[in-house]
Image 1 (cartoon, rainbow, N blue to C red):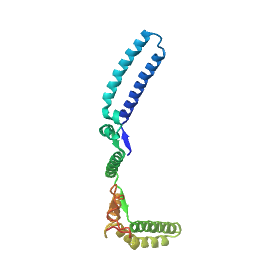
Image 2 (spheres, helix red, strand yellow; image 1 turned 90 degrees about the vertical axis):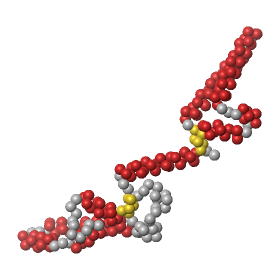
Image 3 (tube, rainbow, N blue to C red; image 1 turned 135 degrees about the vertical axis):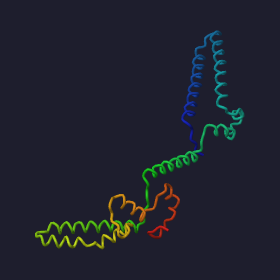
Image 4 (spheres, one colour; image 1 turned 30 degrees about the vertical axis):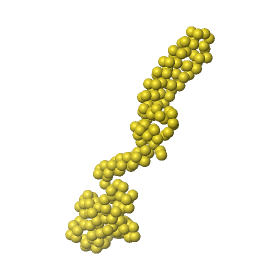
Length: 216
């Protein structure tokens, strides 16, 4: 089992270990300096005082006394519950927070899913418009007489069936024309896009038919 420990709890354990090491190291140093009865009395007094400190530390750790005798890890269950969190719990919480962040971001900048068929249709429309622009540009550059200009103007005065077809494909009703970018954006969004919910792809992308290009 993998666990996560709070950094403060971990650092407190390190501090306690360093403290106890310092006490033990000091006792060993003093023991090496004993030369007479007075030195021995000082050592015993200090050892007794350090023993009290060690007992206080042990009580603050809340380690069951029976663990010192039997060493059974099951006796540490309560201690683990107080200081450790299972890794899978932390990961689930992290994923939940990430989904919440994605949802909040989606509210500010909505994301969408587009079917393969709709995407290919829009690319075809863009290519068609690009082709018409290039064709018209070349025709204008070739104009040399007023008669040619009038013929071109007359031709352009008629409704372009291809453009009307593109309008219908974008969701622009017959009889209406694109008057602003927002109008075209909303029409395409309504006709070809599906709102994307964070986490939806991981859940199987509900509503999408993996065997086709359209949504149910």
